[in-house]
Image 1 (cartoon, one colour):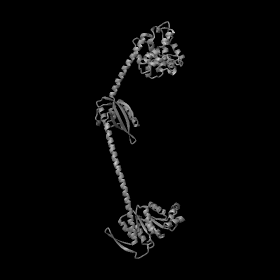
Image 2 (tube, one colour; image 1 turned 180 degrees about the vertical axis):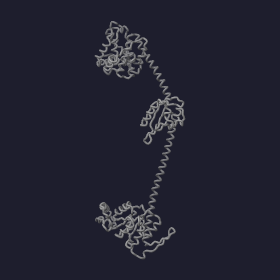
Image 3 (cartoon, helix red, strand yellow; image 1 turned 45 degrees about the horizontal axis):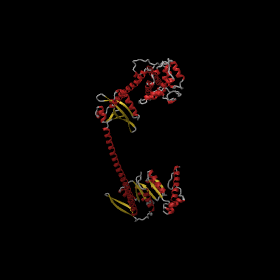
Image 4 (cartoon, one colour; image 1 turned 45 degrees about the vertical axis):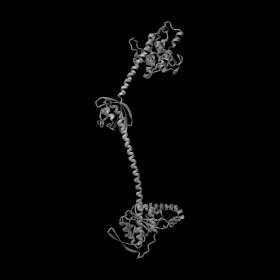
Length: 597
């Protein structure tokens, strides 16, 4: 192809596409196109130039094929190269079309309904007007007998399916470029061929025989190349497969190693491990689990979990099983039944097993907490002993106060009772109330340093003596600050005479600077002090005391504590308990105080 033709090639392809679009439009309109009845649109000028430049101008090719898929493929391939193409679906139709308008080349399948490709070719070669038309046979057959039959039929070229498109186009161009055979009575001769125990007589000219044999050889070369390519692909696939096999073996070995490693861990763990299916049946236990329950692993496998759990604990286990079905893990304490009927406390950690997106059962790890329970019980006993020791220590301090001034002992008990009731009415937690209780029992411990004559003087006290009394919160704090209470007892004692407006003592704190416990204790202290008899004055009465805290609510006294106190007396009928000599003072310390109904 010349440089000029190379330049025009894109234009040729574009205009050919337009031509094919026009033909498609005509076919959609239902126009049946037949050779000689209606010719295809003429080549545009550039298309004609390209066809001439490539030596294919006005070359007509007849395709004989009953497969629509093969027809479409071959027709498109040839039209894209600039050939005129028409189609027949069998041998009879092809003969009629060729006689009506002689093609330059016939490309035919062999196996077709009616007249096959061999018969059609033989008929063409015996037709004086058509015998010089070259014929290319396309077939899936490749036996030597097929070649001999093709020779006897006068086939010019032979091509095996599937074919390379470039190879087919090369054969087409070779067939069209061959000079037309001249009629020569001496050009044909009978050739006798022996094959497979049979003798075959072939009547063809030498050129035709040579062309067919060359095309057959070329076809064999092409098929051999396909086999070579296929062999290379198979070799490559085989190498890849071998590599995958090696990698798979390595992965399987790693999985086996990890499995052995994990099994070793599971088998030697101190914790019991059990695996259950979705219905709750045991499918695996490790030796630790079996030993804990007194069974062998084989005896446990197959049993339902209900066999090793007391009936009264079935609801809690069923609830845990439902949680695991929804993908939740859980942790709780449980008792299991040993083979001998005894119970063993365990800590259970369960998690769901998910397989292919579905709940497949449970993995349970349980730890024997018998020793843990024993340690807890021993610790609780130790705490109780410490608690009694602590209570006795506080009682000793309260007794020291009572010894110096019996009134003070009763006062501290009543203040403690009321302060705890106020705190409970305010919704404080019991732990915080316990701190208020302890602080209340010893809130006046600092008065130990005040002379008894001042505390019990019926004639009243002087300003100097009052100043000595006002020092008792600080003295009480100094006594208690070194003691490690679990509550801020020393600070509560220090602040129980502070007032919201800052007019209290000893630090003149105000508002939230004062601990809530101290504010509560301060309200209870005022109520009892005003409503009780004092050595230096008569009792003012409960009503006066309640009037005092009500009038100064939010000014001197905590509004929440005042509100709770008023509610206790006016709505709930709160009353102080009567003091008795034989009352166990530890009861005041441990919270054994009857709550008002």
